[in-house]
Length: 199
Image 1: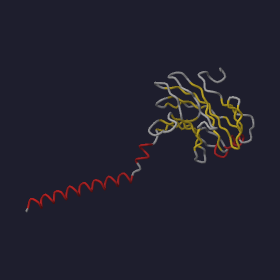
Image 2: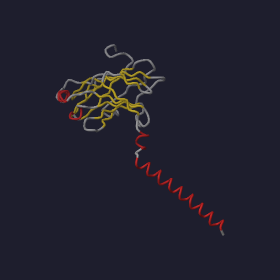
Image 3: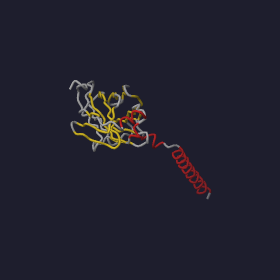
Image 4: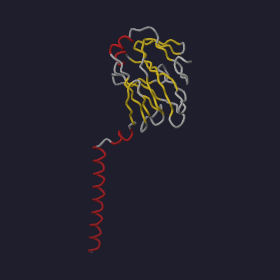
């Protein structure tokens, strides 16, 4: 009779320990938002003119230009907001890389993605050690341009757990207001391995 009681007591103790561990684990995982941290990209912040070294490429964004008109290889595109065009220099690190994600985070907190419908980013394949010159063109409301940041990453669909460049474009309110009235087109040059002006 004593053996079954001792066995039951041990079993109850084990069950209590397991339940205690499960409750403790649940409290820890809900108290700390680890999912967002684990899935978050590795953000590298910079400004225009700075070299941002990512796992797959070294990037430099030049000062942006803006207008209500965009000249995309001879096609003129107009917007009620502004076009922001950011020239980029991309040098792959280690192996060839085709950057697939570019977006501008406006001062309104929204992401304006260069997805190819109107806003564009088509850098082609960058080779290791060979600079590739390309531009990002994004259409956004004029009020969202001042204080905007450029985001660049390798994967166009999923930026989790990989490097992401976050570049402050240093656009002022005055610049955004001027761009909102400018009709001379901002030029979107095709991607090339030759520096701008040497093509």
